[in-house]
Amino acid sequence: MERIITYHIDSTSAGLRIEQYLRRRGYSYQNLTQLKKMHESILLNGVWSYMRTPMEGGDILTVHIQEPESSPNIPPAALPLDIVYEDEDIIVVNKPAGMPVHPSLNNYENSLANALMYYYQEQGKPFIFRCTNRLDRDTSGLTVVAKHMVSSSILSGMGVRHEITREYLAIVRGVLSPPEGTIDAPIGRTGSSLIERKIDFGKGEHAVTHYHVMEEKNGHSLVSLILETGRTHQIRVHMKYIGHPLVGDYLYNPDMEYIDRQALHSHRLSFTHPITGEKMEFTAPLPADMRKILSR
Image 1 (cartoon, helix red, strand yellow):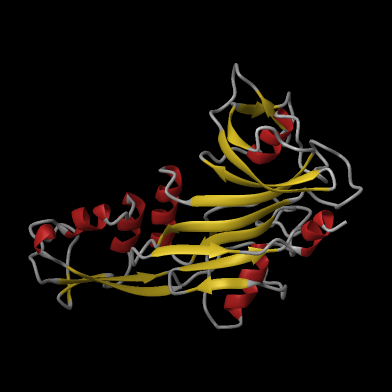
Image 2 (cartoon, rainbow, N blue to C red):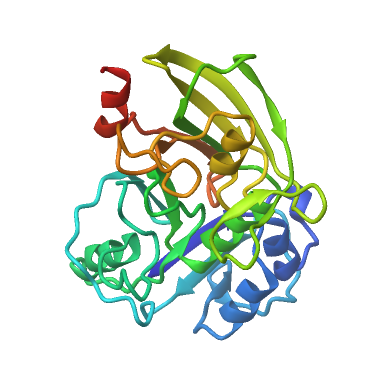
């Protein structure tokens, strides 16, 4: 993937070296190292320049990102893609349930990465898969993928600083009381399992989930959930902990009467665009298999 980014240097950045300015824009040290290896990747007023070059107000800094190779070991596959938004830096996809984000031994050619690899191959573009908010295979909804190394680095930093708001919709068993609240309970591994998690006040990692009931019907509740942290299976474990497990959750509530996967959907993503600084917000409607539970 190739991307040219232009920055207009104002008086507040005058005197900064190029590397200092880019670090303040969210570029990682690794980004700077990689850019140094690319041909004429840093231009100041149209002239190739060293990272240590100081800048003045009114200067124009151009960054030329060149990534000519694609991710190895991800074969392209012609799979359906629901693209919600795309520009030169990011792509937001509404992932269906049942599609893994990354290829694995048992899911080598049916992942989101395979689908995007095919999508860009058809355009004659190289592509390195970098997903910012990973979803479980059976969780549907929004995920954002960075299209180059700089947007990936900036989005990753935003995630660490909890600057990406993620709202999920889940259908859980029973009626919650109170109808809104905060679950603050640490999450850890269950024995030697690589997958299953549990509440562990002794050795678990800090985990906080805010919930709000949106609808109650047929003994089930549609719940909006916002994560402060991003632990593995956080929503699934937290909702089981308060006595309202997700419907169809084979691991924590193995009852497949109403749906054959956990009733969990990544409904809303909001964040600041990693390059332009624009406020971005995207939503994806509740999928049909979850709506069906509430319409019985």
